[in-house]
Length: 413
Image 1 (cartoon, rainbow, N blue to C red):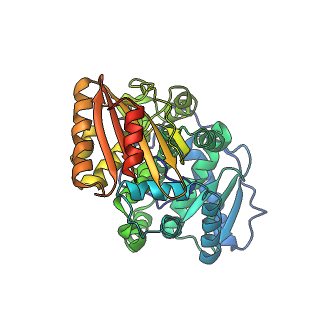
Image 2: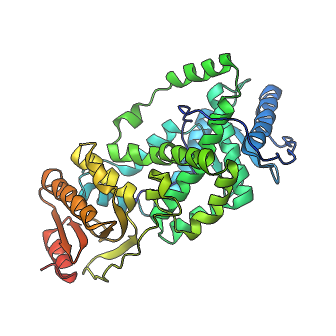
Image 3: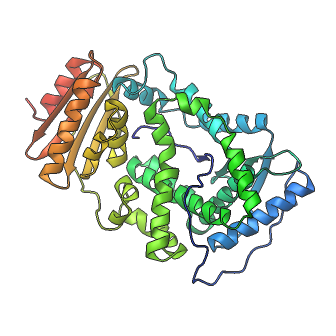
């Protein structure tokens, strides 16, 4: 969702899809791993890691250009690394927290930083650090569990695609330039890529190994995730769930791994959007409409972000805001948008300018946002939904006077 702090930490694997393991492409030479620098694990675990590195290359059809740094940590050490990573991305958290509270998505007394720390601490079993070229995993026992093996395979695929397509650098560039919906789409693509490789790899396991993996996954408890606000759960899951469906669709209908390889080059120039991830048939065809947004000055407030809210953002907003699962369908006709978010250190204001694929799509989202503003928006906050010349405007603010000033500035008097 727009404003959400994003990290390169990966969650537990998804294993619900099936795939063919055949490919018409000839596999490139497989790189033998050099694990001489791996410390703190048994020879048995090193052998498992070496096997998984070979498996990742064979499944994904790409060779390692160099051996990534591999770091195995205890649970305590691993959680410390996760917290350190999250602490690097805290600059925008106060504004994010204020935005979610203003929209009624997050309780006033909630601490977003603590929630995120707890979520990633609970969910992460390994991650790939693109800046360091490092794969980090919880693994200090004599044998890797099946979940650890599956997680490592996923992370090795990230390392492979990063070496070939510079995904980490490009993803960070999208975030730094506030192309947030594009960044979410790109993240979903590379998480879906690694998740689809995981699915294919799981199909190569023996029946007993699959049984062990499923049994282990069923024993994983997720009380923090279960208790988290719905919008955070959906935001966390989106790159893996919708990304997996997107990667599977490209792989099965557009040419195997070559279609995913091409997407790393093509998506940045489209531009990409979460709409294309949600509906893979829209990829390369239904491109985002450029939407102009008025330059508005809000006295006492700093312009925090100007970006694109995106179809996923509207779906998540309406999902939690209305509690009605059918309501997010109102976002299906997303054509494009732009938004401003302002922050004064305590209070937040938001302006979204939206274009639909058709006039009917604009009407449908207007109705959904009106329902959200009427039924779910905090009573003491300002919310305004209105069409002007076929363009939809959504204004929200903690303070009524600020909302009214934004409304007047965009000509909605």
